[in-house]
Image (tube, rainbow, N blue to C red; front, side, top):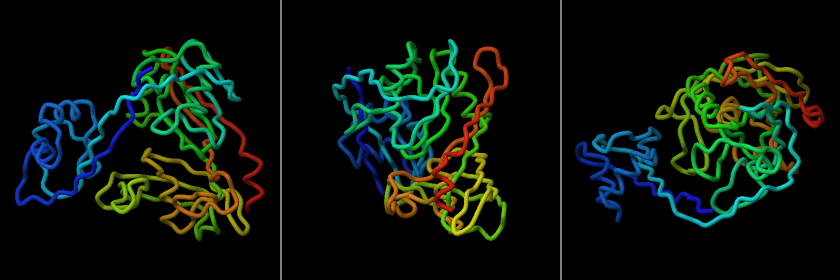
Length: 296
């Protein structure tokens, strides 16, 4: 199977006046204008964390990120990886993903992913998107456990994607954080952008996109278990916001310290959405992992 891994080019620009984004990229790289325009139409170009939708878009100062698909031959095979299926019908599958399981293949990883497990346990998956992400409508980080909905056909995939884009999907999490927040409940509202110092990290920044997180303390002693609800779905949002208020998630090797743990303690325990075919309201829940109580 031929898949496309991504090579990323980051361009720091400081122009005297505004210029077309395709002209700037062409001048600073070996890419042709036609190639750049195609990448823009594929959604592979961002300027200051915002998607570039037109080749004529004007840029002046900031960072342009260009993702270039690189073909790689890969054979995605079904693998008998344990999978907790909470619900399944002809349109969707709802699973409780275990921590440590990457959602899909990518550069440097070809197996032992959720997709490999789905191909083994589920007969049909949607074909929308590239071939390494069949059925995948949304993601959880590798070390985040909890509920995910998978699309079994293209109609379901489109309907669910629209709900996620329209912020119509409800998601609640349990998080174990360092220390005890001063307030027993709170609302965190900031902008989040990709870090300029470390592109693997996100950070609170006025240049980013609006992100809103609400939390309540469920149980606390030395550390705390929080019930967390997100209004927006930015990359690493809960992890960034917990660090921002001085209470990073325990075991988070990027925004805290891994310490002796093999995961970070974040779990999506509730997922709500409308069924893609009959539009009925559906809510799924899981229990808080027992291991979370051992850390407070």
